[in-house]
Amino acid sequence: MSTANEVRELGIDAYLSRQQGKSLLRLMTCGSVDDGKSTLIGRLLHDSHQIYEDQLAALHKDNEKVGNAGEELDLALLVDGLQAEREQGITIDVAYRYFSTAKRKFIIADTPGHEQYTRNMVTGASTSDLAIILVDARYGVQVQTKRHSFICDSLGIQQFVVAINKMDIVDFDEAVYEKIKADYLKFAEQLNVKDIRFVPMSALKGDNVVNRSEHTPYYTDKPLLELLEDSPAAEANHRFEARLPVQYVVRPNLDFRGFQGTLSSGSLAVGDAVKVLPSGKQSSIKEIVTFDGNLAQAETGQAITLTLNDEVDVSRGDVIVSADSTAQVTNQITAKLVWMHEEPLQLGKSYNFKLGSKNTAAIVTRIDHTIDVNTLQHGSADSLQLNEIAIVTIELTESIVADVYRDNRETGAFILIDRISNLTIGAGMIETVQPASYNKPSQFSDFEVEFNALVRKHFPHWQAVDITKLK
Image (cartoon, rainbow, N blue to C red; front, side, top):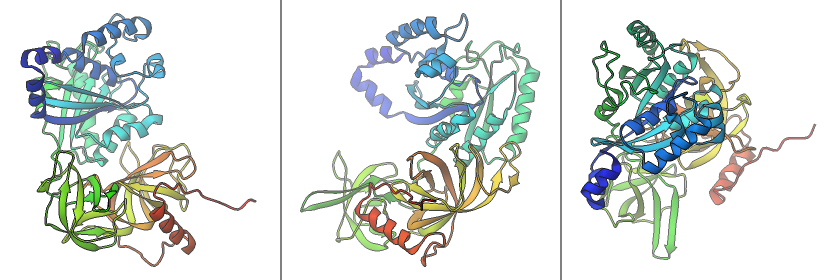
């Protein structure tokens, strides 16, 4: 049933109530160039009746001007909105689409396949619970297929659906399907993904996307949409210890001082003993304030404002945890880093480091080893080029609260930012939290350490700039 028909039949209140009760699955499409990612999303929306009449009319009009599907309706135009995307028939930026079926709700991210836009693919993968890895049946598993699979695995996605697309071009040949499946499974032996499913399909024609295809009698599993409906959504990290990264300190009047943030893991209740990191100061929760009223207890994912029973110094970038928490405070980490800029990584160069709401300065002191995305073998390097992946050691000017990424995605992921251009140049996942070195980070001067800490405390929006001598 289409959304419009469902609203007319149930009424808006009943429709919204039903939507709230459905589970949500966040997913993404990725793979090599021109594997049909945007077309697949368009087909899912079209065949599940998620396109309004005015959108469909606009699609037909756009198809006459810039359609790239021959006589077929170019459904990729539903998600490729940039002019450059439509002219070239490629995806450049990440496009998000929401749709729902009778069983559940979906937020799907269409990510680019070009190597130079891998940074955008990482953005889409960072919030996804499931990845649809598209493979062109004509070419099989490509380098970018492996790179995207490895990044998705590194970002903790535990469910893959490998969609072997464009099977209509190879006459739905079972041998082609089985060979690609075997090639991918051989590569995936080196990954940590727990659940990998395969679907032979044609996004352009609609085979095995929403409806089962008569052209693939050898395929006995469900079509793609049913696999998505039945896939377990990633559970919010309720079992991990409580972490509340402070995003903002609220002071509307003399009688109220609250600390706002989204609870990234665990739960907190009124009366709980807590401590503020990295300072270690302790207090207890007085109130948990939300837009809809006060709560007795807050759960993972809720946006809340805490008030405490004691006057404790708390700033943006601090993390509120349970008093008995084992959270680690450090200024040294080992991480898996994806380099996302044309200018190579330089050892010893100062970059801005952002983890949650915490901002500080950092340097990469060592590249432990690089990772070849084709073989996943380790190599050595003293720099990183665009899209290279490596295990690195990072040193910070200030202490942070850090968790291993696989334990907590929110407090285990960070980005590196160029201090001049303010561009994101690297994305990392913490592998190991190393013991802190509080004497002074070896690569920073005493002045830089003290100056950065002082300025960031009093001017949280200050942008640091490197100054070097003129030669």
